Image (cartoon, rainbow, N blue to C red; front, side, top):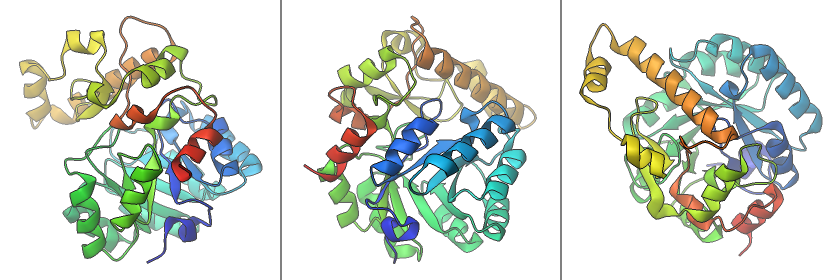
Length: 313
């Protein structure tokens, strides 16, 4: 089974995970110089033209491969346009999230683009393998953002034993000890996000970065109020005030057969706007997305130093 290093021809088996509102061109360029690969969500760009400009710049300035993360369900109204641009400009790989990757895999492979698929359980992993995915991103319950239900200790061995494509572990890595643990369990590599939020190259607010320094694993909570799905956030005073569970009306709309599709899309959009406001401005209504690996963040550092802390004790 090829490792992530072999799959993408990189020095270290690490993907700088795609983070909504956080990942940017500067971070991916720095990641490539440090010997890893970075991935940015297509939805970090408001228009397809902005995405095209970002990919063009990355192709000019990255010293290695980079990827684009696509939300492939109906909540992403720009999906087809984004996929077309990724295939036309031939990004190195696409990571799919929250939907069926079948169309993405078929079109990307015709363009010579690899596809890695987010999964949280064995059943879905086998489905994407059958569709032709090049690798699995095994999202465990230690991940930031939309985490899975299973611990990496269960998920990685289960998938590596049952699947015939590389398994990349997502969640729980903040230092070399954790990285080595994932590789020992059979992972081909890791996807690491939260520790890079507090990087010099990140453009989020200083308050957000300092929150990642000052809060720790014990301060991370799950909420389903913001996107309709369980998402990890820092338990700020505002999060404590609004609570982390949907109210009775929200639960009803989320289950109603006729209304749930539209309610989910509306909830997702509203949640993303709240994340955006908190990420880039000082506000009482702080909703900062992060995972428990912020436990290992002790100061704001360049991407290169963060990579060094992951590969060298």
